[in-house]
Length: 138
Image 1 (tube, rainbow, N blue to C red):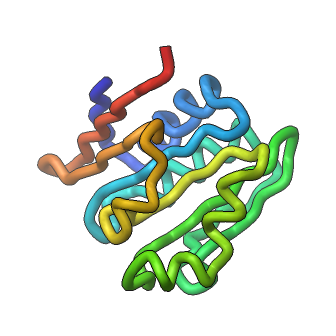
Image 2: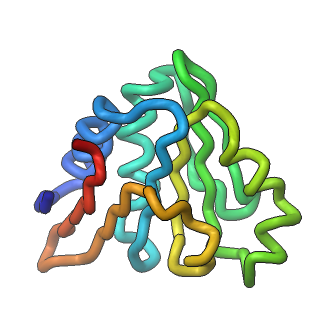
């Protein structure tokens, strides 16, 4: 599925639409350059899954946890150098929980991303964004 976004609001709406299909243990892997809207996409998804969550980028914290009807983990691998660094964060233990996972900068640790991850590629296109969802949800 390909979505064209002309604003942050459009990007959030795309995330919200995907969230309606997610269930516990789903893993959403986000790819894209700095500033393309990965966190906005997660913010939109969280508006459906955890409406009271104040979503912000976990760049320095590595992971944020949001509670709602379902627990949501929001990872940011920007400051992770390799899978050894990722292991020390508890990432591999957390992704075994009955939660929904969003992970930014998945290109940093491709071997850590579950094979069945829903992959979201966000890129700049003109003044907007191109959001491609490799939707493994049937």
